[in-house]
Image 1: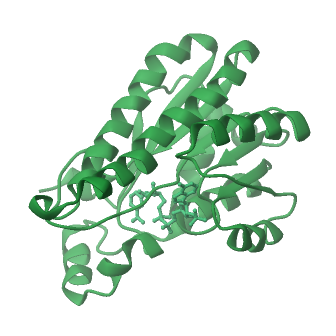
Image 2 (image 1 turned 45 degrees about the vertical axis):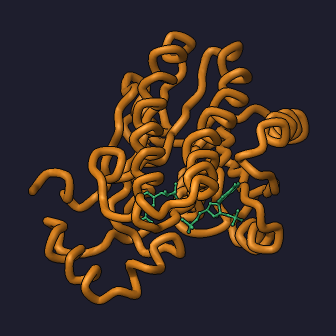
Length: 251
Ligand code: NDP
């Protein structure tokens, strides 16, 4: 009974931005728990390599900031492969500059990718889930959903909004048998954090600032994702689960 609650056999999971990094680790975790995974990204070659590495996975190239392309892709996936039971809104970008120098185009690029896309993909998938009376949505938040940091104001603004959109989705969609929650990763080594990984001062800061004393390992996000994608979390709604080695628990 207890372990069966986490079994994802027979479920289909779409993970946006899953050709690399956190999205790819979550896709592998959901696949290991039995789900059929649908990968997404813009780079077809990268996505094909990722697809070939996960048994049974399929891959769909589309840009999550392009609403008509998103709607067409969701229709195509459901028609050709079957219902999407689990959606992980993971695709995201980082752009760094002091806010006084931040070009407006950069601001809009980050907003489109990190928050508008969560609405576009979330709404398109929810419109399929609502008539079925079930569905799981997991939105990837951040420590910056809770706190700011120098040079990344557009990112922190968008990630704060993802946290609140998770609650808004819960408010509107929980009544249809859906669970909508977030995962807030701490610091993980991925291409998104290249500038930080290459900075020895930042590395020392992470190790000192994080109660666990280290960066996270990508596999350490899989348990939270499996939990929030499975029946084990069926009365958990509108919650953000931080996987951060305790960073947010201390000052
Ligand atoms: P990466 O840069 O490694 O991966 C980002 C992924 O998003 C890529 O696969 C990229 O694929 C995809 N992507 C970007 N833009 C689009 C788009 N317009 N349409 C479709 N796919 C897109 O980043 P991470 O794995 O680090 O980040 C994943 C998520 O986790 C992000 O939301 C990030 O904000 C969040 N996060 C990361 C943390 C970390 O420590 N790394 C901490 C907290 C949150 P492609 O290039 O093929 O489009």
